[in-house]
Length: 236
Length: 299
Ligand SMILES: Nc1ncnc2c1ncn2[C@@H]1O[C@H](COP(=O)(O)OP(=O)(O)OP(=O)(O)O)[C@@H](O)[C@H]1O
Ligand SMILES: [Mg+2]
Figure 1 (spheres, protein in one colour):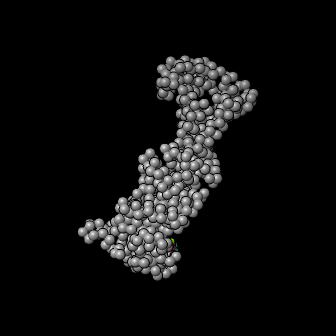
Figure 2 (cartoon, rainbow over the protein chains, first blue to last red; figure 1 turned 135 degrees about the vertical axis):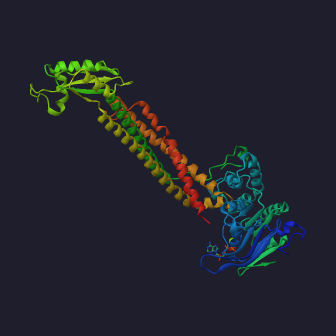
Figure 3 (spheres, protein in one colour; figure 1 turned 180 degrees about the horizontal axis):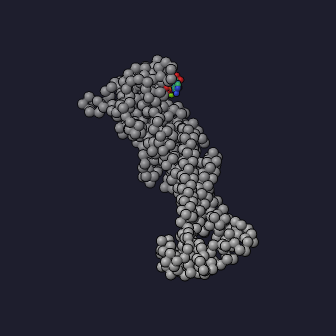
């Protein structure tokens, strides 16, 4: 499993990873570094799992990639752009190219399931007529067809998770970062959601999924990044 | 809850991205409404004072008073009559009328009291000159006419009073404009404060919007619209209250309003019309500027 060259060398894209971290360290406040000397790059169209014990720093690593957290040191670059030198405006544009399934979902409680799912398209200033049928279809696909008007506080954990996934993928982002996206659903629904990620990956989306679920990881046969002691290891 | 059968995506309209207004906004509505009410009252008083000053100014401009000292061999009444005749012939004079003794006494009565004057006190005779408001005779022309007629008289063209009245008008206007500007500044400040609070209270929503790629201007416009709408409603309440109060004063006090110094016309009620819009505009600008500066300072 080679993270750095998952595509044939003659491909121009192989030299242009969509995500690149070099010598990245992260500490919260004055505590010791949670992540240290992280070097990684994700080629466009690649699919990886991110594993590690609870508290290993999986969510922290994802946060740096979806630009919710700045590294304490090192280089983070997205789509070839060094985020340290990207102006604030540019960061918004980068975020629109990334779909995130947050570990704690972060659904907007005052908006219906449908409005939550449509949020990225709205922020991208698309016309409602252009996307509402697609949003309805996607919600149906993740099994929320009967819950489109429901408010997030009335949804079960698994329903929230599926809604979070729908929101992450609805705008067809170039990268999908999912933090424990199948933690709250039964194995059958878990497999169905994995199929969604695999399908999107097949269409060219770069996917990185943080997960504990060894069964799921083994079955998918996709490469694994393992976090331990604040460092990143390839392979299981 | 509505189920799948009744959900039709074609009927879906995007819901407001900020949570519906909450109880905290009630006090904000009150503050902006009171500010709007005060601004409207200020405008009413300013307009009325301006009208009063204008009216007095016109009256003063269109009139002059001549004090006639009797010449030798003439009764005061004869001198006054001659002065009136000379003045009436000047172009730009509508009427020149000698006031008789009783009228002259009446004029000084407020200062000296009724019947306080001894009968033989030689009161100077006055000639009231009414000028053509369109083309009033100059004071030089009037003085010239009196001199040619050989009347010993002094002319008061009211220019001193006119200046005072005009200054009073300017002061009233300036104070009204200043008070309105201060009210607007106050409104802007309270909205800035509310925006700051709103951003803090909606931290999670704002963060999710940002992580989903929303620009600062997108987030700021949510608060801008929210507070512009709130200020518009509040401005409407304040303007309505002020208009009702003014209408009541007009009904009770007639054309003179509550005091002759502040004459009020029905048309003045129209002065409250721009209030809701101005309140909304002030709030929009303030909310946007505040939100943009707070968001821009984040990492
Ligand atoms: N905002 C924060 N402030 C301070 N410490 C934090 C913060 N977020 C995470 N940490 C710490 O950083 C470490 C890594 O946390 P992180 O959430 O990245 O782990 P994780 O691998 O996602 O764990 P889990 O599998 O339980 O989700 C933990 O020790 C956690 O306590
Ligand atoms: Mg985590």
